[in-house]
Length: 205
Ligand SMILES: Nc1nc2c(ncn2[C@@H]2O[C@H](COP(=O)(O)OP(=O)(O)OP(=O)(O)O)[C@@H](O)[C@H]2O)c(=O)[nH]1
Ligand SMILES: [Mg+2]
Image (cartoon, rainbow, N blue to C red):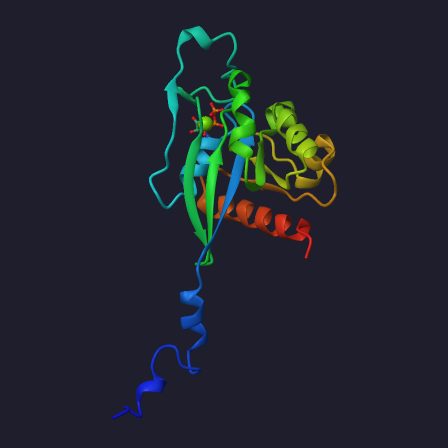
């Protein structure tokens, strides 16, 4: 005989909203983290990744002394030679896969591959050497990929308001510019949230 209680279980119309939220399949998107040499891209990915970030760091040797300027980051001993990879879940149903680019010019040939399929990019900037992020800005402007500018503020260096950085970089008014600290998770999450919001704003309905 049919059990009268049967229809009240899972799958019935009485499902709670929270339960539906949990059942929703997460959406996964790819995000690129770019910027000049030593600006903090690997640190950015490492600060928020919920999986052990995959890094491709190589120890810098004296051979690179002439090409890699370490004046702003004297403690830096390694550099990314292929990419960083990490994952963060925002709001339980949005999974971001983060791909950090190598900063040095000699590895830029990889960018086209790294950027394929991405919904947007975080361009990191250091106000002591703003010009280092120009190639990344030019790249994303020319390919039309949505981006935000994340100014990695190194403590002890002069602080600039986001609007001053926007002007110095000639970044369009609709592009979010944030001042953050790549070592602090909450400020990295803010940068990613700004990027996702900006990318959604630019997506045709
Ligand atoms: N004081 C300070 N140091 C930072 C900050 N962000 C990164 N660093 C340090 O700066 C150095 C460079 O950081 P990385 O994350 O390796 O930079 P990157 O952009 O990945 O460098 P490449 O891959 O070589 O281009 C490291 O020694 C970090 O510990 C910051 O916000 N403040
Ligand atoms: Mg790196």
